[in-house]
Image (cartoon, rainbow, N blue to C red; front, side, top):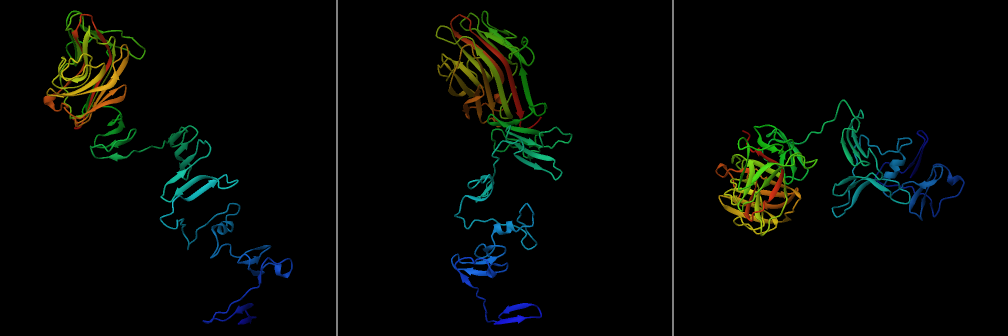
Amino acid sequence: MLTADTTNALVKIGTADSTSQVLVLDTNTADPGAGATSTNGAMYYNSTSGKFRCYQGAWTDCITAAGGATLQTAYTASTGGTTPEIKADATRAGFDIQDADTTIAGTLFAVRGSNAGGLGTALFDVSSTGAAQFTVPSASATAFTLQTAASTKLFVADSTSARIYIGGSAVTTNPITLVLSNASSASDPTGVAGSMYYSTAKDAFRCYEAGIWRNCIGNTDSTSGYRYANDLLGSFTTTGDVFASSTGTGAATATSNATIATNRPGTFRSTTGTTTTGRAAFGSTTNALALGGGLTLYETAVNVTTLSGATNRYSMVVGFYDSTTANQVDAVSFVYDEGGVSTGSTASANWQVVTSSNSTRTWTTTTTAVGAGTWVKLGIIVNAAGTSVGFYINGTLVATHTANIPTGTARALGFGSQILKSVGTTARTVDIDYLQAEMEFTTPR
């Protein structure tokens, strides 16, 4: 059972056979005191704790956890000097942190700081679902940094200023570039406000704003679209791209208050004159825009100086239309019609919107009242297919139409604004600041 090998300076328990021979150590309920039993290399079994105890300068558990060494043991016994480490080797080349089964939820792994008095703040944690989160407890200009081996900053999160930098914040001669996803399809993806990508089919950056995709840098190329803008700094003529017209004594559209405000360098004033049916209009000379051929927009700012009423009634039409009358065959417009003069409209003090295709109309009365002496921005956005129209007041969507939208060359439209008197002989006026019409062709010309 016990063999002393003087050649190799060994003491053997049992022999190399199928019969087990065991060494049973002394059992005690507490660590021995000073003396021969408390010398380096001593070992016994503690029946109170149920653990083997070893003496190496002091009594300690020989095995710090049932079944083998703990992660803390490996950490403490690392070769990292003053910086403890857990180190892989040729046999154990990686680390797994795994929950016991699929029913366990919560944080799977966490790196914590400031652990005085218990668990510290989680600086980095990974949940059992794979979600990862970094937390910087205090503001930092470099809360998160991704850099090269040469310390070149690629990405920096600044929690102090709430900024994300591509590259660092410092000026450099070799900037880091942000490359957006490139798409070869001519169709835009599902949009989310603030999203952006690069279209190789359109050779343009695309931005999603106000519920639509559009070129981020406008239609600077004439082959890709049409764009008309006028700040109304001078008089219209009846020739060229735009025209002004009027009927009735004193009716007119003319330059007015060219410097009405610091942010309105030019305005036009349309007046009905002093006849019951006086009218004034200005806009595009021809009906040349065919909806359905690309994203189409119209925008202007108007100021109704005096509201319509029972003794002096008028209506106003702003947007896309095909004639300077109260009832258009084809139109996508805003309408102010307090007296309900236009066919199908409601006698309302609020802005109304209409889509009309070959005289079949769809009307909506918005919740926005027309204000006297107040500038308001009116916008119309028609999607590329001509199947949906959004109407905007001061940038807020107030109505959407999907019916009776005039499309195709047979239903071509012009654009502009007009005021039409129907009751009374006192002149009524409306001021217009600017107008802008734009179409982004689905198929470049």
